[in-house]
Figure (tube, rainbow, N blue to C red):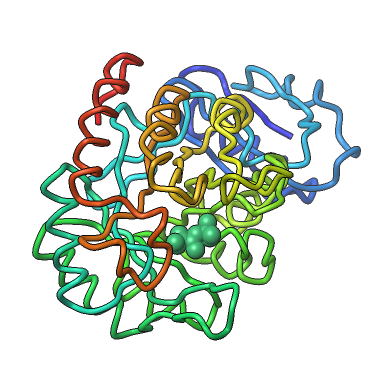
Length: 337
Ligand code: PEP
Ligand code: MN
């Protein structure tokens, strides 16, 4: 349930409601908005009457939340969430670009990638050190060595680092070298991993599962938030459909759907969303037009020799073209990029 406090409600009034919720065995999640404080109570669904809460001092209104996800619901934070990472805001007016190779391959490759993406205006470098590959014989990533290389390349260019964590045992290592933890599509419903991420106080980018509905994506976000980690960024990366021309079907409509249902920022990944580099630019434009808060893109100095996902990886000049065109779209929809 959600209790919306009146504008200017005092701390004592807010605490009074929190105490009441706790006494009824609710776990309380607080969202302090510009105008209203919202208290989310997760607990016994039917054993309360919203009218009892509306009678408490300082309460504006109380609602029973019918959706399965509550903390991820737009009602919990009507103004939207901005995830702040070392001065970079994801979910604000600016569309944040996270770009780099699918995998970190060696120091020279990741240095070049960092130079290319920083020069064109990206603020975050991406690159996998632990790779979820369909075949056990494909390149599996460089592990810690790759993370070190990426951190060095990022720091030389003032970039943040995002990289995928596949397993909870990798978290301490990942936390030492990265700024945002990416949870891959294959792990969106790894509930044990999500419960561990919930205990961190570090931003998590949660990719939509290959065959996941938007509701399932929001429920996975709820797992992370239920443990008190509210720094969740969602990512549309295409879903599997009967279409075979593209690697996945980029569900651009999921962007406004998520915006309507949730307060969390959503980023678009047209690289995995299409699997073809000629489609990445138009789908990036479409994503920005649809309201994406960021773009996650694969870029390599020589994609034809990339160790993974070369076919969907942009060449440097294609990336700068994408940045220029996406800026025009961003300004047309009242954003910057
Ligand atoms: C990736 O970002 O390189 C990746 C493996 O993505 P996904 O989990 O969306 O397949
Ligand atoms: Mn990839």
